[in-house]
Length: 336
Image (cartoon, rainbow, N blue to C red; front, side, top):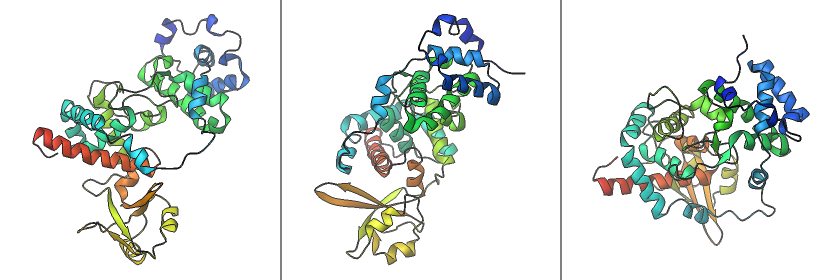
């Protein structure tokens, strides 16, 4: 038997004819094809999907925000770092940690991810829930799926996922709000990531990313599922000899595949008295007018890049986490 979208949506009147005004998404051939696919693949009622999309609207601001800048700026690690490692974000992170210490401890015990890493990701993503976005998700995803060809395939998939998520959660698909790219809640998960990695961490029978506990558990689960290794290093500074071909090593990719022997042979020395005996990647943190910082990134660094495929992002999370850990210990008198 085919399942329909939740009855609550019908009760709200979202499928009434006035939503299908001239020029609405529901009248476009590619949208009709999408609705037909949702019926054939997943058992939705085609007309209900069309009616929901008839209530969606084109968001010009979404296109403005997703489109690459006309001129590409010069990468600067120090400028990027300064966005996330300031007093307000550190103090806010410690306050968030104190307020949700039990959930963070539980997540660390269950998934092996330290509390400071979880807090840092939520801090970088949404400033601990202060900035989760105010775009209606179906409208944002429809805009990107049907009106932005460069990324249409990705966002068409996420549009499918928001309908599936709404059905699973018994929610109106038009009730979700988040970022211009369709990311939701404290941890900014896309709909596909919510369906794959989110957990009901507070045990109340539902997943709610407007509440921090589910976000905390889901971030930890996401990292664990992407290879986080309990108790292992994230990254350590590296010293390079003049003979090191740094660019070739960086260009080899972010996955940690360089063995300790290869690292030594390349003229790289870990700036640690007891470096991990594990494969690593060479990370370059370039700032115009300043010497490039080099780090060795390990499996846990790579796991953070699965959240956002950027070495700058992963290093900002790591360094914010260290600052949070130190400040938390100073404020509470307890080492994490």
